[in-house]
Structure formats: structure tokens, C-alpha cells
Length: 305
Ligand SMILES: [Zn+2]
Image 1 (spheres, rainbow, N blue to C red):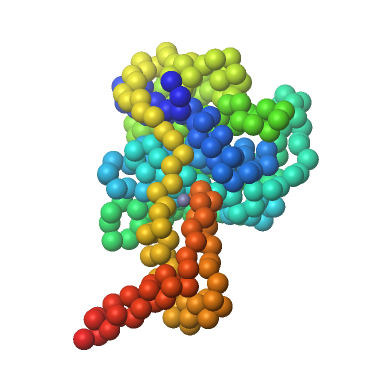
Image 2: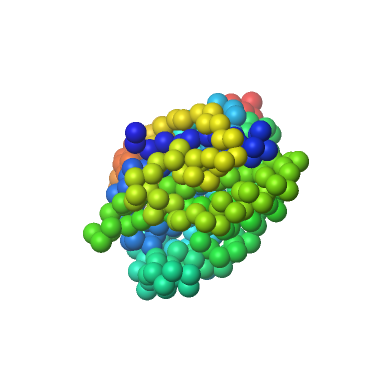
């Protein structure tokens, strides 16, 4: 099976768990945004998290947006996911080349995601079809994204969570493996359950090491929660998908000020507008821009009548 999410419960529903294989999704993101390895890793981790958090939402039209904004060279990363396994995202700066760092625990050379992101904030915004979107924000703990999200769940949603996210990059900069899991303690979990989970997590190797050995999301959940009455409740595909279109881009252009639109039209040249999320380019002629402007003026006249 290609990219997919597995949803599960354990310990008589005192634990809920999500795990994902996002290898193709992240490979697609790398191809669209031409990201350097450390940015592929950072964007990939956030895409994995977004896909899993999207699947936590119940509504058909619910959307979740994760934004990591730091003072490091990547600047910011934005990821949006729906509840159907569609996820998309982009980095402010895809071309970041910083030295690898040595992992203090294993001595292995690792991409310095935390250094590329820097200090800053993680924002989670959920559009659940209510009047106001839900917004939660926490300070980045390490910029490594997994720890930052664990902190977010604990502080903002009062749900103690273990979050593991990883992207393994090949020598040619392509994506070998990408995946992760989110394991959450529900209220009233007993001390025994918490201790068993902690012991199991303490022994666990990095997600991409497990994937390299051929383990999929189900296997990884079995490894962590197998002794805690794991029940797999759902498996569904995920993909990198952007829903942009000429129409959506022209709606965005229609939000420009009249002065801005008039000045673009006065330049007399076609303009190219790129979708941030997927880099698709849309060209608009001055005639089309004129039509957008006139349509809008007509619309606003109708309103005041
Ligand atoms: Zn797009």
C-alpha cells in the first residue's frame, strides 16, 4: 500500500493513536517546491502531522492549517489538510543549505531541522465550519516539529501526546521514507497504562529506521501498543493534493484593491500568479483583469443599491 494513515485505539480507548506513511506525499512536495534536504525534512514532518491531524477532524469540509514560523533560514512552513487525507504545504524558502548536526544520543549525522526553523511559534488553525476558526499557538520548543506538536497538544489541547515524525533522505536528495505517529492519552488513563506506554516509547527506534526495515504504520503501532490491546479502527489513503484553480485564483485577484488592479492593467502585460501551495502558474491577460475589475465594481454597485 502506498501512502496511508492508520487510526487505532488501545487500552480500552484510554489511548488513541495515528500513524502515517507519507513517503510519496513528501516526494511530491519536494518535486513541486524543489526543496533542499533540510527543508524536505522540515516540510515532510509537518505534512505528516497535518495529514494525521486532518484525520482527527470529523466534518466533511473541516480544514486544519499548521504554521511553523521561526527566525531560521526557512522562515516559515505552512501545511493545510482536510479530513479526507488531502494535504498540501509549502516553505517560505525552499533553498536552505545548513550543516548537518551530530545527534548527541547516537552520534549520527542528522539534518538540522531545528536550526533551519529557529526560534518562533507554532500555530494551529482549525476551520470546523463554525463562525470563527479555532486558533491555538505555542512557542516552538526545539523547531524539530515533533516535540513542538507534542508540546502544543499538551498545553493547548490538554491532551498529553507522543509525537514522532521523520523523513529519511537519500544521497541524491530524494525521499527514502517519511512517516510518523501521534499517540494520545485520553482522560482517566491509569498510571499502569501511562507507565507501559512510556516504557514502550523509550525503547522505540526512530520511525524512519523502522520504515527502512520494512515496517509500515500498522506495524509501528503494533510495536508501541501491541501489549496494550491495540485495535486498528481505520486505514485510509493520503496524498499531496492542491485544490487551486483559475477560478480560485481569480477570486483572490478580485480581493486586490481597485488601485492595485488598475495599476497592473495599466502596465499592459499579462501577469502570472503562482499558487503558493503547489507552484502551479496561472496567467491572466489585461482583458481578464479588466473583467475581474468590472465584475467587482458591478457587484459593489448592486450592494449599495
Ligand atoms: Zn495549488
